[in-house]
Amino acid sequence: MAVNFETVSPDDGEVRLDRWFHRHYPQLTQGQIQKLLRTKQIKVDGKRAEANQRITAGQVIRIPPLPEKGSPMGKAKERRDNVVVSEENAKFVQSLVIYKDNDVIVLNKPAGLAVQGGTNQTRHLDGMLSALRFDKDENPRLVHRLDKDTSGVLVLGRTPVATKKLADAFKSREAKKVYWALVHGNPELKEGKISAKILKCSGEFGGELMRIDEKNGQSATTLYRVEDEAFKKVSWLELMPLTGRTHQLRVHCLYMKHPIVGDHKYKIDGLSADFLKNKDHLHLHARGLKIRLPSGKMLEIFAPLCTEMAESFDFFGFDYKNATNPFNKFPVD
Image 1 (cartoon, rainbow, N blue to C red):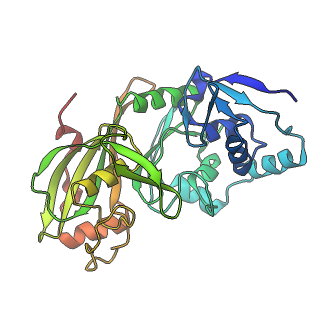
Image 2: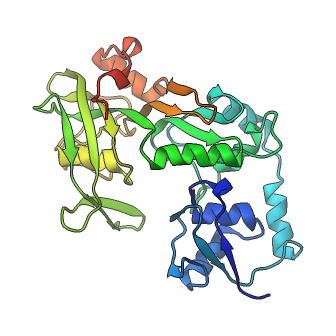
Image 3: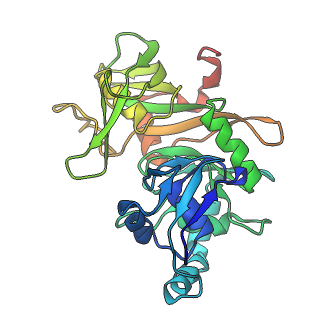
């Protein structure tokens, strides 16, 4: 087989490079994609690429010679793709749906459920998408991501065209998101804007680790409001990211010197919440999303708190069940 070059279609939306390969070349395993990237056999617009790099319509991908679908490896991958989701997992993932129409599905993702597979990660949302087809002939597609330990609103596109429009809304920042967080201490300013550039660096044990770097980092901006506070120990924050950097809210809370309770990556030594039952749970929840749907309808959707965060909020007496619309509290562009 010869080397090929493929142009990314608008129907693919904005998608991770490895997801694009899984969609168009399902015979490849994640490990094989990673190897082809490491050896620079896969390139985007003539440049070295990464698995988590997001590609957009019009970009050109270099495709090296690949095994055919009919090969033993390809057949094994096809069998994995066609495995029926267990009844237990199907009921579980369907129970997460909080909104559905012809173009979009919105889930309330629980903390602890990874969006996509990875090292030592066998149970993930991506592997259960076939249970969310409902009346469609194809799986819904991920439009964006949440960290494994972050709960809340997660959007899926039900068609390639809808996925592209939804992805464009996230990319252009037309889509607005609000998060709830429980943080250590009480910020002196009860509302404000955090503008601090973020740079990705290598973690101590591998993986992604972000830090503030005003010289080399990417611009990142977060609006915040203190909704309530308790005993000078903790505060309930509403956070609206105006940019979408990896771990942005967690890094910005640390930058304020008020790290998120249960965050073991972005923390201040000596701060603890030992009095909480769920002290090790990351107290970060994607509370709400405001987005224009492909149909033209403007959707505002809110995800109830996960059990662990609800127990902590109840412990402090925070009246989260009667919270008002957070989108009315932040400045309009």
